[in-house]
Every structure is written in structure tokens, then in C-alpha cells.
Length: 132
Image (cartoon, rainbow, N blue to C red):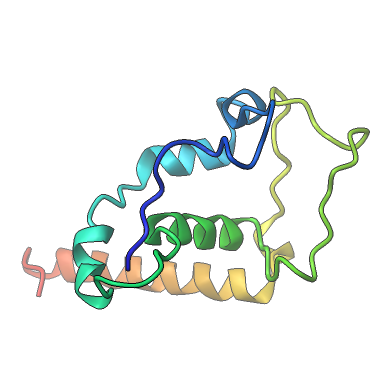
């Protein structure tokens, strides 16, 4: 049975509001503003049973995968939480993103694939104006 996230995360936190902790200009908010996953439930409904225990909401799972990829989180079990309050940055400080050559091999491969797809798309459009 396909689960759906309903309501907030109140059952997990007592006096904690995620919206107050995540700065308005944080990358996850920017990602959320451009990603529309409203189609996911309709697309995946045929693959879920009508009986049984509800699953994790597939939209939430996709969002978790995107965040894991963007922040290079390979495993929730192997990566130690960085909760040291002394090392935290204020929300108004810019993020020092690594240069392309400093990125991991997987990220460099992904960026190269995006560049290749974009250049193919541009060459298709520059030909006779049609996209095949």
C-alpha cells in the first residue's frame, strides 16, 4: 500500500520546527522550489497493493535520494552526523562549494553526462530547427 506523508513531523520532534532551523536561502529550499513531484503518486499507483502496511511516501523517498546525491551522502549508517554547534555556519554566510575538479568521481561523471546531453540537444536544435 502506498503511503502518503500527511501532516508535519510532529511525532518525531517535541519542540523543534524545521522551518525555523533551515535558512530561507538554503540549497534544499531552492531545490524544493524548482522540483515538482506532483506526478509521482499517479505514476506509481499501479505498482502498489491495496492491502498491507503503508510504505514510505514515494515523494519523500525521491526527495531524500536527491538530498543524498546533492550532499554526497553515500550511506546513512557509515556517515557520522555533524552536530557540533561550534562548526555550524550562520545562514547568511555563503556556501563554499568545491570546484569541479575537487568533486568526487561520481559527481564529475554526472556533470559530464549532463554536459553531453545538453550539447547533443543544442546540436539537434541548431540543425534544421527540428528536435527528433
